[in-house]
Image 1 (cartoon, rainbow, N blue to C red):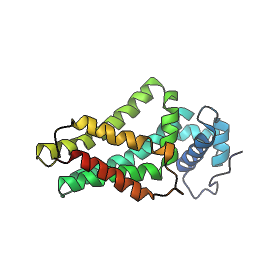
Image 2 (image 1 turned 135 degrees about the vertical axis):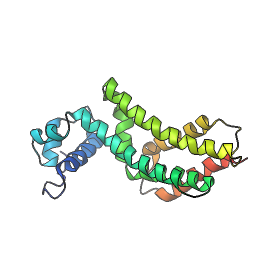
Image 3 (image 1 turned 45 degrees about the vertical axis):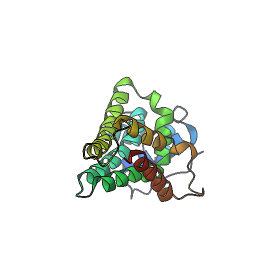
Image 4 (image 1 turned 90 degrees about the vertical axis):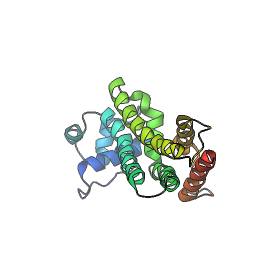
Length: 198
């Protein structure tokens, strides 16, 4: 039986529902978690869940979408900063690692349970993720066009390489492991920049 989340009413209902769903999906799996378990853990009624989220599937979509929105906002800030391209790309590359580790349950749930989304919702999430990847790729291409980064490897492949590492963090990273989240982020960002060195 899952522990109760904040039912005091101090946390807004949508956040309580998301927190409960995230924990239960991570512990039990999306398909083995019922709507009743989610509302009990959040201390709300089913009516409240359906007021804020149309379905359990909407909760699953939002688990991932909220992290992606945060990462997109931060990437846009790095990309638009008045800094050299190497610094902007390195900061963006490290940031996506840190924000993924900070939300490991969300990432793990999504990659384990994405197939439960309807084709339409799956398409929406993929479009949002593609927008993030395209903005990240634009930084690589900017550096390549300026002659700062090597063009030996296509920008698409460089981006896929980095995000392959990011997407697998939930399978091996442990908070009590030998490396802090910032150390992992720094190592992966440095690997990316070394791969782009002319």
